[in-house]
Image (cartoon, rainbow, N blue to C red; front, top):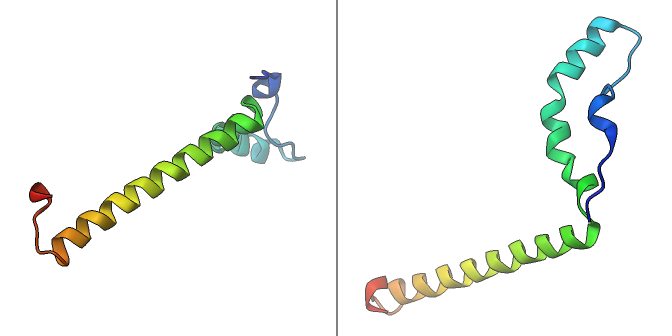
Length: 81
């Protein structure tokens, strides 16, 4: 499922100016690590993970909507429902 490459040892960007290259390579590892999971994990796993987070978000949204309906429409406290 995971593929490891030697991208971490390569420079992030190559420019003709060594000072700019050093600055960019020093300041871009955070962004590179944020997107590294795209190369690390299989696409089907990432789609499944995204769908899981999406469905759990919809469940929380529906739970909140039901709680607000009981609170506002039926004038019940959440502990009474």
